Image (cartoon, rainbow, N blue to C red):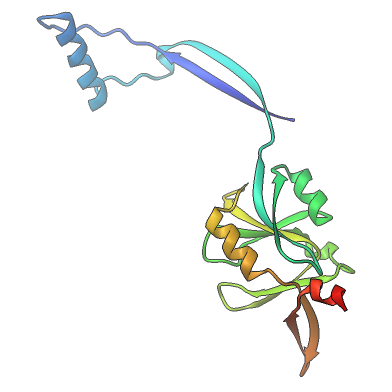
Length: 185
């Protein structure tokens, strides 16, 4: 479980000023405080309060890409164990795009035997071939967040079709196909 604990420290300082009224005295002190004339530090500490609450894991909207299936938008739990259940192993994030969107996939050392899934070119035009199930989400530092509505539409469309991989002149090439049409035959 995750918990949020709010810490509130109270600092206090008394200053004396000459003024014509209580309001003017307060205004003078406020102005001096904003200018940095009064700086409260550990010597001015008077109290601390702690307030804890249990955090409910939030859900995030991602584009899920499974081998041999069309891309789809899903809502998933936002905990490491949720990611690892979906992708089938230790989670690893890669950042192939210019924007703050990442791919969360199974650690490549554990993907041996997993079906090849999709290919893409990263921002440096290097070919990346991904295996197993993975998803795309927004990344801010170490935190994963929902894709925006525009990003959901963009990446669902871009990665809509799964790929079959064939060797052409010694190079692996991805060929998109519609798995629903294969079932119609």
